[in-house]
Length: 121
Image 1: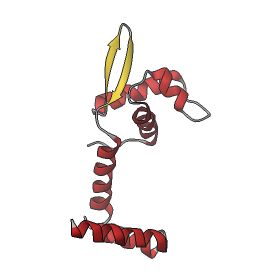
Image 2: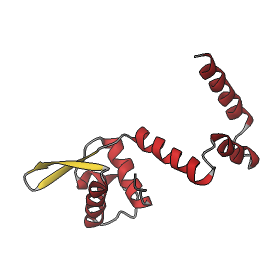
Image 3: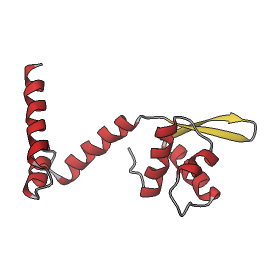
Image 4: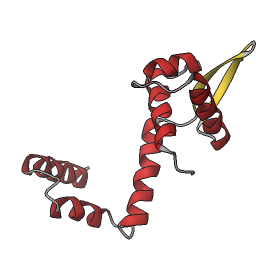
């Protein structure tokens, strides 16, 4: 799976939120300063070439929709992160956050509860 640029991710987030959308709809979801219509249109076509987006034609207009879910992308991105930066070890990823005090005690307790529940299932 190809990586998305920040601009592509921003468009995908808007598309995941909407489900299906025309470029003008996606433009409405962009934060200020809003990019040009042609910029969003170009990004959507690039996403389509990369296989992240497909479209339905309505005359000369196209309504776009994601070809994978946010969770599918999240899973692939997380696996890539763990593989590329943490030697394929989720433990090393968690250790990284613990060492930098990025995880507070409440979050750690919740993680432990989740691990125990997963072990019992």
